[in-house]
Length: 297
Ligand SMILES: Nc1nc2c(ncn2[C@@H]2O[C@H](COP(=O)(O)OP(=O)(O)OP(=O)(O)O)[C@@H](O)[C@H]2O)c(=O)[nH]1
Ligand SMILES: [Mg+2]
Image (cartoon, rainbow, N blue to C red):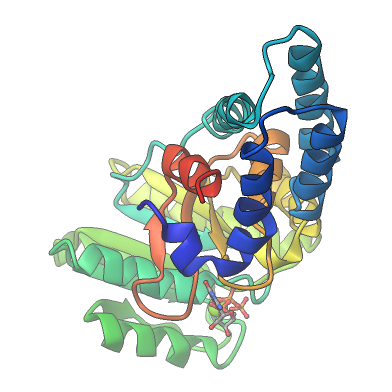
């Protein structure tokens, strides 16, 4: 893990890690150091709600004389950021049923493919359910991922009730003894009531037909959307019970601070991060590794 951000998330490295390194090297820290830190965090999408209280606490520590140099600043910042990310952590890595939801283009289908690959690599038999029957190209796109990963697919036809695709997938999941079911859904605006109802129906079908399974409903959030993605997530969370977030496209123009804004404003843990279009560009989110890596040159 160490060096993952430097190697793979180069923009995050340059937006946060490399800039913090110069502050952590200081022999004396003062008000201007904290002003620089504040600017770095805001520019990296951590948001005002996270940054302001954090800086206020650091100022207090400085006034009490416990924050004298860059090394002490690093330790204190590390503990505070980690505390934010561990308020709520994803505890459903053992779930066998995953439902992916999110707005158009946020990365649901790609994440479904990568998750399939991830589980197949652990020797698990994966069934993908093509419950995006709204967009004509959605089925073939998921089929392509099934081919690439060796997963099976329950296809849907354009215009078919997504809940009926999911119903068929549940039946096959039981009959053919699959280990993992991943449901890809249509992109939707959080404001469209009928589409939200459709999600509810998908959840109901799974609960009825696979009553013993723990179900992880995951919201994909495009990290490149910065603070805007928070409003979307809030609205989704109001109409669907979300268990976790898949933060996508961390290899893009997003600056990585959004993870802290998500942790602070939503009571939903980040479950996975994705960082590229390759099959293996996904991993479970580990708060401690992320913070360590983010604050280490
Ligand atoms: N660079 C990068 N691109 C990604 C990542 N995840 C997804 N993409 C790209 O983002 C675009 C949208 O991804 P999809 O998986 O089709 O998104 P979706 O949410 O299924 O979209 P709809 O089905 O239209 O709602 C595609 O071009 C993907 O290749 C990622 O982690 N990094
Ligand atoms: Mg899709």
